[in-house]
Length: 108
Image (cartoon, rainbow, N blue to C red; front, side, top):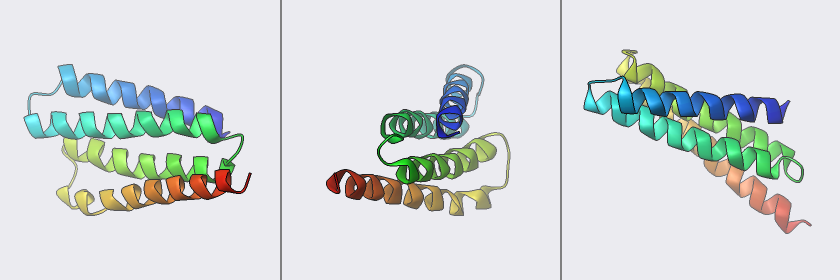
């Protein structure tokens, strides 16, 4: 399931980045789409890379990236700006996922 979610996450990230580059006139919205897409794509690939060794960490990376990126995407598409207060929750989960991955690899 993690592999499927990671692949879907990567596909969404590429779509968001492309939309930010070609389909949005507002510079701030384009920046949010690019940033969300970049972080989401990096963490989707990372989750695929570590899912065999650190499955829980991979899931945490995906969850954090989803929260981080989706809040930015929604704001870029006209959603409420208070979502920006939720975005750091995703960032915190991504950091926790990386720390969990480091611990998992250190246990080997």
